[in-house]
Image (tube, rainbow, N blue to C red; front, side, top):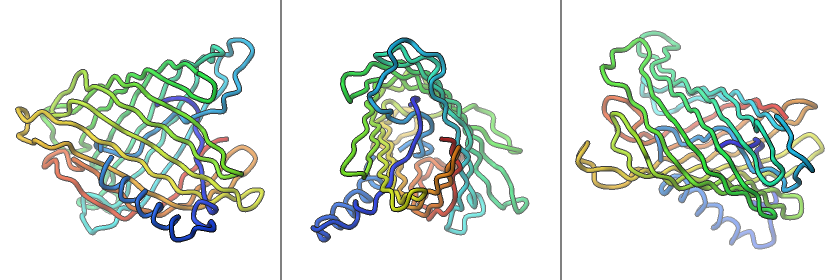
Amino acid sequence: MPLAAESPDSEEFLARPAAGAAGRLFVAFVVVVLAGAGSASAQQPGPRPVDSISPDKAEFLPRTNFHLTANTLSGGDPRFTWDARWGGSADVLDYHFGRLGIVGDYEAVVGSERKNFDINQGLYILEASTSGRYREHEFALVFHHVSRHLTDRLKPKPTAWNVLEARYLRNFDFSGTTVALVAAAGNVVTHVDVDYTWNLNFDVAVHRPVKPRLDVYVRGLGDTFGVDPAIKGRTQAHHSGRFEAGVRFNARSAALELFAGVEHRMDADLHDYLPITWGIMGFRLVNK
């Protein structure tokens, strides 16, 4: 998913003349995010759509994006009390009609089984992509790698998969309310200790400035994996989703987001491969 990161917000998104219709649309959006569109972690790192303005000539490292995110996980399960992520993406080369990008991202799942802050899982994401632009549209070919690990716990088998996917990215602007859309479909080309066969995912972020240095935003992410029944006996596709809403404080070189929401994660535990739903509340620090 690489390209350059940013997130969007909305107040006008929630308060327009047709308030009833907007409310129904908002509810539908949340339902689709949580019930429809999942990987081990629904939160996607890295590239965001960028404006269609391209450099006149090839440019090396025109964009980099870094983030640090942490949020609580409700529910009372001692395996899952906090979730933290940090990583970044870079456009290594913008060649005027597209770009080469990379992503590196790490997630730590923190519980309280053995101590107050007990990191019990780690998840690594590595990605490389190349894209082409046509007017305001961007199309990318992406190689996406995920590996999951237990921390201070025995795990005889590794857990990992690679996806080769096609991705679409676009920014929209509706009278100051910005919408960033990323959507992708791919084939799981190799996997170890998982039954995934194909993947669909999306990331939609809506931002609305309310003051010069303050935005409100909503964001929804969804992930769906098809499965091979011969491996674990599962026959239906599995889903993850995340919805969050919050505020974004914009400073000169960075921004701070404070948010709350809900997340449904498939295969949350590496032993039982069962889905879990949490309430979430946290912060995100990003560069600008």
